[in-house]
Length: 255
Image (cartoon, rainbow, N blue to C red; front, side, top):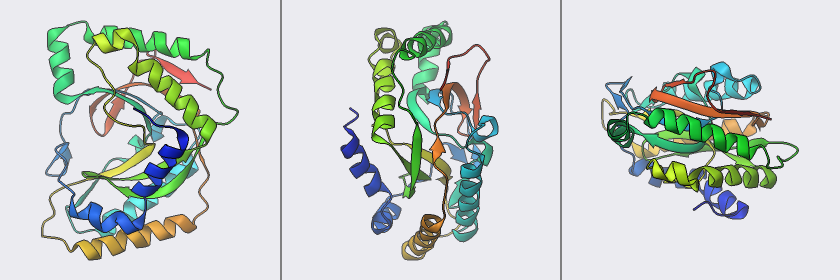
């Protein structure tokens, strides 16, 4: 499902173009992951970079994103933009299973968690045979408006992209992972979610909101952000979209 590097760049650059903000805003929906501004139960697993609170390498990068998040919250209509805790900022390398699918899988197989954790551990061990690129870095492209969220999108180098895609193939094409009912549902798009859409206290003016987001994005483009350093990723279990946990013996890759 994941295309080549040029296809990735074309797709993600399109997602961050301010010229598309108005159309994207016209199609937003409140996220079901929040109720009255509070994160609701939404359990599952994914492969992610360590959340900011556990990340040793990207503090300066995340400090800038925290400022952008605050600008968005302060600028947009009350109730429209529900921020996630900045300490939970991360990049998802591979979505695995979540919400109703996860709940159903654990009811059907009481050993589901144990089997998934063990299999991802084997895949990560096997992935160590892949030659990693000399530098795994991603550059910030800009703000993107998703149907239910606002995020920033990033672009890896071509070597980094190809390496990430090889690991995603090892996960999604693994026979045991498929038997657990896990399949690839999304193309890879390196992004960091800043917050989700809620129900605004009043009907908002699309053009006004668009202009405010464009202004924040333009200011962000003028800043000299360091690249995001992809030094580690790990299996994490989430209870909702703000809380990502792991046990010490769960799979992790350090480069």
